[in-house]
Image 1 (cartoon, rainbow, N blue to C red):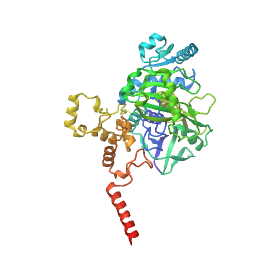
Image 2 (image 1 turned 90 degrees about the horizontal axis):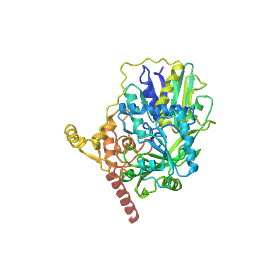
Image 3 (image 1 turned 45 degrees about the vertical axis):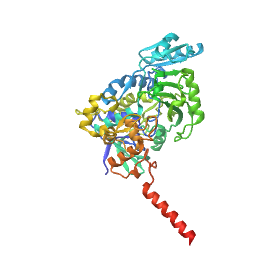
Image 4 (image 1 turned 180 degrees about the vertical axis):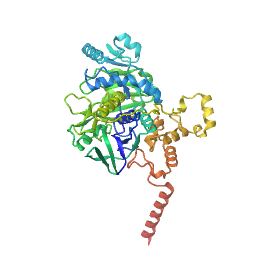
Length: 500
């Protein structure tokens, strides 16, 4: 019989990786199965608003409310342990009319019921003091002190690294195509191989309904809600100190203007219910809407300074209460962590705690490890070092003296480390998510070829095998010299034939 796992987690987004890390505190054999080529490479963990929500928006008593507030409280310690940048910027819900002010009172009351700390209703003058570049039409705002910003994929990578460091296993490029209950264990089949596990946790994001229905549990459905974003250059980052929301609607928290932890300005998301779970294209209409609505909050940004756009898909549950779907299904041992839309990123560490307790109640024996290490090996960020620290580092490892990405000042040493770490980078986008090579003004046009070269060398593969994001996204199709010689030969043969 094949190797038996105690818990198999489907999905390596922030929820799946958080669950893996939480369970790695115990003497368990854990496997994370992911259809993409990397953690945070497919769904909402790769593309979202990068915000730690305070927790005033969810309906009191809901899982969203409880897990949002608890999750928010956990991030300071987690980010310190995992060496992940976090900024407690606070957030504003800005009202631009007296009618909208009434909505602020409702949000304030909801936040108090949810146990959110540091909430206050503030006047126009106080808003302008916090956010000097907000439009003068602002009337008042709800200020949430505990809100913050973070890099969503950076955090997910850190959690995965620490889970792997503590014994959790990861398998990538492995889409689950069938699950069967066989007595007291599950057979989870991918297009490559089969895995056996006593318990299965479904953290498959947009495909969590497909996975649930695959095992024969009581069906539910999840649909994608599309949000389009723009990222502006760092010289626009000064325009927002906090996360600036507008009064939310039934479709979500609305279009925001926010700084990022790396100093850029983020605008979005739009909100559009769609059917295609793979439709991630941006549109002229969507981006124009994001720009137009964002200018209601801050109109001084220069849209010509946009360096990239992207689309995120939220996994919105088609249930009456629109709450997270978390719990053991009617198939014993099969646990759902499904329909995790906003504030799912903020709630992720609290969801992991909840899943741990559900597994325990379902019969999983939890014995704590005495050697669990909560800390990730620190990441060297060359741009943050002093000149003295840089010189010392370069003497120890000359690779840190070679700048590969000029826009973001990323060194060869940082890229090599990102590839060699647990659950390391295997693609151009994998490197980009870890060290930001390719995220600057030129979007990789300068550093891309060098990163391909480093990946090929470190992974011991041909440059032709290096991909942008796995699957069929190869960067190169042929060696230039060989390609040109073949073309020249074809032309010569044609000329000889025509002149014969």
